[in-house]
Length: 265
Image (cartoon, rainbow, N blue to C red; front, side, top):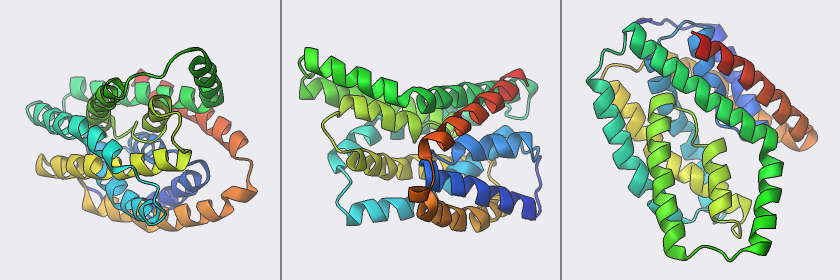
């Protein structure tokens, strides 16, 4: 799909996805990108590029709130960026040299997206189990050296830079979960705030890169923002009154179904 005119259904989809993001905290890319591909027939590369810039815009507001409350660890953000920024640039450079409209490229992008969605679903389903395992491990073992943790954080940045640029998925659920393992004594607010702050340069560079190589649609971006911004606000306000765990499990099941469809394309 090369052209796109304003479609109210896209804004409505953005509102629904934004509402779920406000309730669960899961990154909108886990829902938005596959929705654009499967429901609206948008080319995977255009969907990823548009979603990256959309994420950069929406995460700026979130980072400002976390910064105001002192919930961003800037050293952690810097370590992630040391790995993610070069990885993002390299991934974009490699993508610019291939025919992204070919059947092989489409298959690679949709399969990669499906795999990342499946991983996100597993994290949503078993997050509590992962956290209990880590707490038990910490009781029996000495914490790794700060240098080892710093290197692991840079490596995580490299992985996130690659997979997020390729699929737009992973900076939220996967990034936060791994950071909780690396920094178990940090508060969840500090981890989430730092992850959001790091996602801004990652998604901004990725979105601009896709624009440069011709895979970004401004009308589509505006349509998503019109719906998702009020959706995120309302979802955040309603979150304390809703059963977050039940919604998270339902969302994980949906992601598994969507991932299966993408992998089968």
